[in-house]
Length: 287
Length: 287
Image (cartoon, rainbow over all chains, first blue to last red; front, side, top):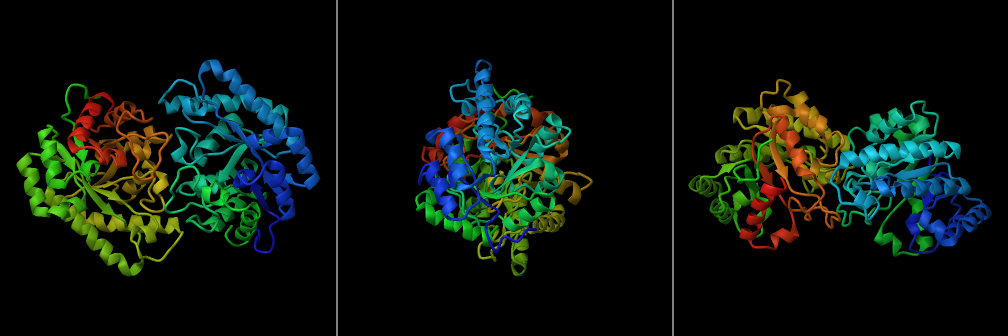
C-alpha cells in the first residue's frame, strides 16, 4: 500500500467538492496553488465556462484528470432514448477533449427520476435492463473514442432516483457480460461512500482487479447523516475505515488517484482554500 | 398469491406505526375496533404498560402477534457482553409470554452505536463477527424457550448505527451457518423498506423458503426521502412495487401477516384512527 503520509501526489479533487465556492476556472487555479495534481470535473461545471476554456485552463495549470462526471441516466421512455444516447455520446466526446482517463457512469434509477418527465414506473428490473442496454450501446461509441467507461455503483438509498446499480458485484456482472475480454474499455468507479457497508466488498474488489478498477473515490459516512444527498463527511470525520479500503483496492492493482468527492452543505459553506487544505491534510492522515 | 382486496384479515400493525398517538393499551383497543387481527409490539411499549397488562390486553382484545420487536444490538465491548446476553434473553422471555411467533432481531452496527458508551470502532467486520457469535449464543436459549429468532436485514444506510446485516443474502448465510437443519428456530424478517432495492432479492427470497420466512413487513420508499429514520411512506405513496414483492414472498411459501411498520413524522402527527383506516385501505389496494 502506498504511503500517503508524506505528500499528496495521489490526491485528486472532484470539483463538486467546492462547486459552490467558485467556477471551474477558479477551482483549477486553487488546486494548482495547493499543489494538487488532478481533478475530476462535472459536465455542468465544464459547460458553465465552455469546453475549450476548460481544456485550456487544465493544460495551463498542468492538471491531470482522474475522471469525468458523468454519463448515464439511461432509463427513459422509448421516445426519449435517442436523446439519452446523444447526451451520453457528447459526454464521451467531452471526456476525450479534456483528456479524462474515464467517463464515470451514474446509471440512473426509475425513468421518472432518471430523466424527469418520463412516465412514472416502479419496475426496477426494467430500469436495470435499460441500463444494461444503454451501456452496451454507449460502449461501442466509447471504444471508438478510446474512452473507458466506469460504472459507479451508488448507495442503495439512491436506487430509485439516481442509480439502480447498487453493489460492486452488480457493476462487475455488467462488466463481465458487456466486456468479457476485460481490455479496459469498461470498468468500475469504487466510491467509499457508496460501497463501504457491503459485506461482499472485499471479494468484489479482488474480483475487479486492475483492469476494472478505473477510479477510487473517498469521503466519509457520518453518523448521524442528516441528508441523503448533501451530508457526506470529510475523510476521518465518519465511520468508514478508509485506509483498510484503500489497502484492498491497491492490493487488487489500483495505482491511481484517490479522488475526494464530498457533497456537503457544511463544506460548501467554507472558503475554497480551507476545504482544499483540509482535503490535503486528511488525505495524508485518514486515507 | 392471496387476494387482499376484499378484507384485511392478513393485516398486522406494527405498533411503532402509531406509537406517538397512544400507549400500547390504546393501540390494542384501536386495532380491535378496526377489526385488525394482529399487532407486533415493541419492547419499550410493552414495558411502559407492564408485561402482564400487555398480555391481558392482547388476550382480552383477541389479538394475535405477528412478531415482537426487538432483540439484537449484539456488538459491544467485551465487558458489556453479559449485559447484552441477558437483555436479549429477557426479550425472548417477553416474546414467549406475549405469544409472539418470533422475536425480530435488529442485530446492531458498530459497538458505539449498538450499545452507547462502548469504545468507538470502525471495524464493521468485527461487528459482524460479534453479531454471529451473539445470535449463536441466543439461539441456544431461544430454542429452549421455543421462540424462533428472525434476523431482519436493515437497509445499508443503517449499517453503522443499527444493523450491519444489510442484505437478505447475508442474513440467510447466518441462518445456514447457525441453524443448518432449518427447523424453524432461525429465520428472517423481510421488510420491503430495507430490501426492495436489492437486485439479488428474488433469488434470496426463493432461497429462504417457507421455513426461513418468519415475518413480512411493508411500508414504502418515498422520493425524496427527507430523513433517514422517520420518513417512511404509507404503502402506495412511494416507489416500491409491493404486490410484486408479496407475490415473491408468497411463492416462496410465506402465508402469514403483512405487517405495516411505518416510522414517519407525518403519520405520527395524525389521529390513530385515521392512520389505521389508511393502513386498512392501502393493505387492500397497494399491498
